[in-house]
Length: 578
Image (tube, rainbow, N blue to C red; front, side, top):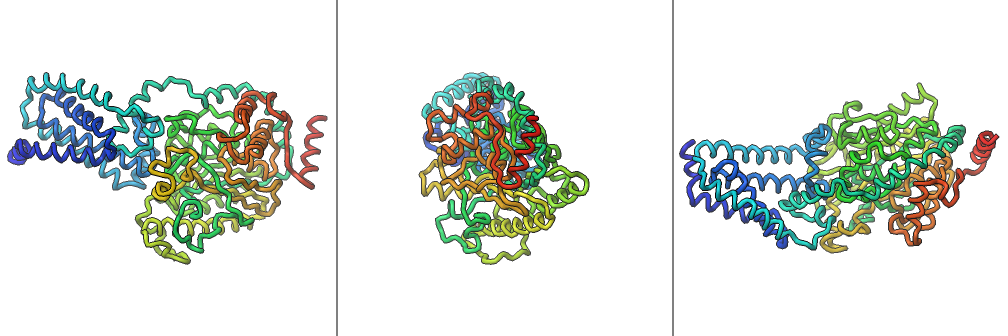
């Protein structure tokens, strides 16, 4: 061991290590403008280690290993979530058992890589440190060098960077350190949270609306499928679209309906929160990725809670663990009565085929109908199209038309899209066979990371910095089973996610509260656009409506039924008034 240590302590080897380390920092940082900052961060880490240990040789190896670990974690998070690491991750994600289980199950090689780098850093600190004599002179010099390097790192931070660029740029070293400035903003007011606080007072008038809803006898079951990483190739692909996928996302009326979401490549829970709340979750700013933690207990006017008050049994099926990014607690806080997770379904992994989750959903539906006469609102998350795409899911399953591309990842992604269409069709056929009126809504949560290169070619090097980018587009479709829709499915150039929940209520024939009716009216007035609505003052008017129902443009319960359903509603309303 002593000979090995002497080898690594040789000045020439240390010099080569520093040269390779400097080159590695440049390779990992990827941006020339932030490279000086990355170097001073590296030197600061080394100097800090010297301050603690008094061992300069050991600290060089330890410091470079720590920087490599930071770069590797940054690479992994950006690759799979398209959002750089944030210092707040340590609080929200690092010790969340559901998140850790998800990482171990789906990204084991990356986790192993992080562990190896971490152990390497510890080895440099303890093994080399055992043989190197500490030097008080080195420690005193480091006491001067450390604050100087920190000051220079701060001084060389580009002033032109915005919060979006800080989160989205592929800077594998400086991003996590840049995020430290957010700690100073933890107590800053966030407009979205202020709006939610204002809404509490508006809930008093909702009870009689719920009473009208409960009196409706013919409420259909509602099944919502939030399809992981699903996007029609027509939206992003610039090659020849496989004929097996053409029109495969259009629904019964053969119409592709684009849906704009607020996240890319990751953050499924952000889309879920936007759907159930009708609010722009991205307005949480740099805290958007932590929405499930921050919004728990704050959303009092959710789609789920309303349907629960209308007499629905609300069920959430998650392929992940209950504690994953606080999903279980958040979903229960917005009105889900039953939460079924990976453990409950006895799923072998967090990424099974869609048919696995659909079979579990069918079992829940059948059991419910045997024991409960309430209608069901069921929310199902799928996972088959989730990354990585470097292996063949269901390897023995043959899909018509494959191979779809010479690019192995695109080929596997298209293959999974085709499988998802087959599984969804089988699922809807089985639900229809249960002979209960049901409305099925399917929508994509976000695009997969492999579409980013396509958008860079179309929109420039940083498409994700533009919230109007096509990279935030997915689609939705509606399938009525054993029932007629109470209203036509709207077809706009695009529909923003915030309108999808109220659209579901409208087409399912559920009475709308004044707030929901105002949101529906805004959808039509703004042609499906929420925050970018072209009608001046319309968004603020809706926010005022949410905070005070008396300010809504039409403070009456609204409904869009026809025929027998409409007569039933009128009779229920008359009985309530009498």
